[in-house]
Amino acid sequence: MYRRRILRISFIRLCFLILLSTIGAIAAANSVPVSYAMDSTIPTDQSEFIPPQCAGMSFDNIIVGSGDIAGGPGNDLIYGSPGDDNIRGGMGEDCIIGGGGNDTLRGQNGDDMLIGGSGYDIIDGGPGFDTCMYGGEVKECEVEY
Image 1 (cartoon, rainbow, N blue to C red):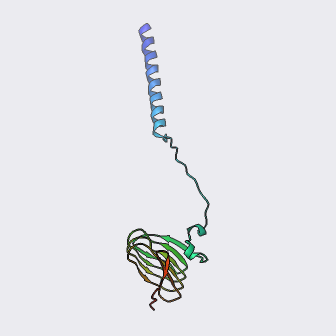
Image 2 (image 1 turned 120 degrees about the vertical axis):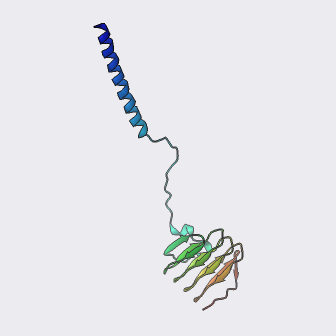
């Protein structure tokens, strides 16, 4: 009788330990490690992205890319990468910033601002009254129709 009681108590303890282990395993599988990273939002508007050379222009799109970049039918602010880019503004009055590398900047239609950067750049304004800047200086720009 004493032995049965010990076995019964041992069995109850074993079941209790199995239950606790199962609950602990489920809780561990659903835990998320603590992170001290923050998620914050800083309100901004379009004017903070517009370079001083393009101040006064309004834009429908701000495009940042690399390689082959094409603007849309509206007024675009287009930033190239430090590498070699081929950027086309499309329709509208565009501000195109080539960045570093050997870039080809084509304003296409509209009155465009084309800003070259370091590297050997080809700048073609296209139809319209276009302004070209290279290295912070206004340069003569050949416009092809």
